[in-house]
Length: 188
Image (cartoon, rainbow, N blue to C red; front, side, top):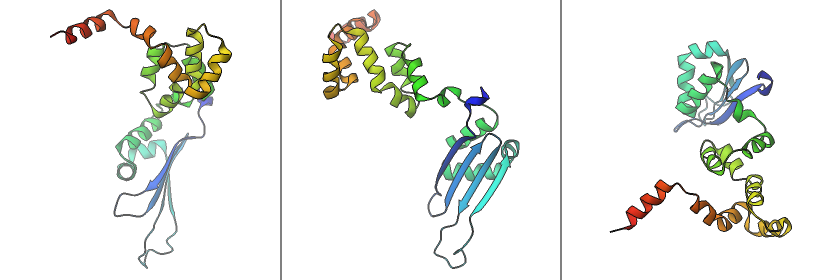
């Protein structure tokens, strides 16, 4: 599994919070944490200040509350928590798989599960809304000539075709309890 990990596990960069104009870079590699900064100021005493860099082994970063606080101030507590998890060895291997392999895995799960998976991260939202997923869904549900569907998909998009033509099928397959709830809410 370690071979799935690239040397850089996480990297982000950005400007510090107002009123600072300083720029920061935060990198977590397989072995260390790197914190870089560039002072950006019009004040004469700060002009020409060289960039700074601090490198810590993972364990040292876990024990350095001052640096952790700086990371949280600049990039937020969610980034800090993610970096701490990486330093503790908690890797999200699924996120690290290539798109092509993830699309293959997604092709084996139900459309309802794909909808749930799309809510987990921006990467999965992009994958779950990709033409590859919806093309498989349309071709798996239709008896129409695939060439005709292909030309229609160029105009409408695969997901729109599925939602338009197969909505009735999805609605009729809804949970009976949901249908009963709909009937109860519609009556006076």
